[in-house]
Amino acid sequence: MVINYKPLNKVLKWIRYPLPNKSELISRIYNATIFSKFDMKSGYYQIKVKEEDKYKTAFIVPFGQYEWNVMPMGLKNAPSEFQNIMNTILNPYSKFALVYIDDVLIFSESIEQHLKHLRIFKNLIKKNGMVVSQKKIKLAQTKIRFLGHDIYQGTITPIKRSIEFSEKFLDEIKDKTQLQRFLGCVNYVADFIPKIRILCKPLYNRLRKNPKPWTPELTKIVQDVKAQVKTLPCLGIPNPEAQLIVETDASNQGYGGILKQKVENHPEQIVKYHSGIWNPAQTKYSTIKKEILSIVLCMQKFQHDLINKTFLLRIDCKSAKEVLEKDVKNLVSKQIFARWQSLISCFDFEIEFIKGKNNSIPDFLTREFLQGSSHDHPDKENGLSAQPF
Image 1 (tube, rainbow, N blue to C red):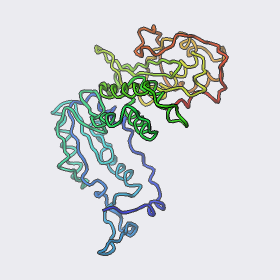
Image 2: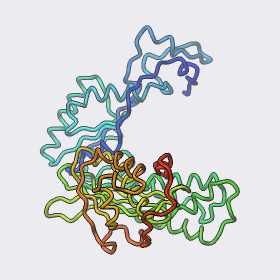
Image 3: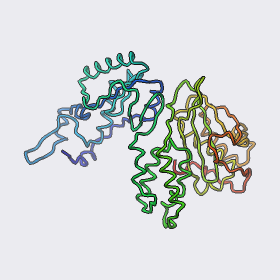
Image 4: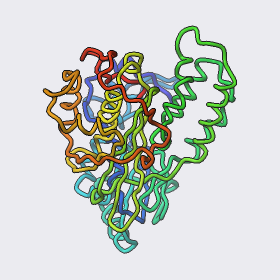
């Protein structure tokens, strides 16, 4: 049964309780090897409506007028209220329990530990009068599907149906709406594909007014994107004990970055990719400005993982290293550099210069160096609107 609660939602006061950050949730299971997943049965129906508020939920059917005793679907505060209740129950046990609205994940480092955690969860649910869906229980799995990703031994990949979308589109996507949908789907897996937004720049250009006719080059780009989506890599789940490494690079078209982690006696592991294309003003920046801006934008993208940690910044531009280490008073175009330096002043990092051939983002940097270019722009165009992020 579907009830239109738009009129009621207009007068309801918002409950400003945020839903969890999915990346933050996943980062908490870096060391887990055993998982169990639960779905709270008819989640919202497990929340009782106060007696004095029941009349607000009234609805009419051919058999008469009724009111809800439990929270119905369609109320704007339902997700926040349910998340609040579940957090109240499970937050004291956040070391082995995650909850996103009505999805609960219990995770452990060993089967013995997992059995203890499951007993605690069972008692919590019983004590609070909650019910799980028997049909959706997944117990003691080494590989689990959670929040749209497959999780296995400290790695994460998008679930299959999230990457099969590409086959639903033709290689020639001439319709603007269809192209927007295609790029939106690509954006969902952007963390797993290096330089994806650079590759897709000609496709983004077609979203403008009066685009040029479709060309074989655009067809080739769509085919290349589909091929990359089919072979997405496994990325590492951030480990709080690992040394974090950020590598960035810039070209005339855009920028890219990689977040890595290094655990002792293990090879470096890629955690995330990021890329973006320059806006018209930024394409006129000097090379040094593009390099610095790429560092700023990548640090902001990886902020959740980098904040309050000391990490290594690897760059293959000596001039960018000098700018970041110098007092802005001694720099040309110091106003824009000062602003960018202030934006990354909250991060604690050391800089390592690497030769271009050793950069993990190959074929990305054009080698021209235009320090002091006449194309410097005022501070109001500081590049922080580069699109898309």
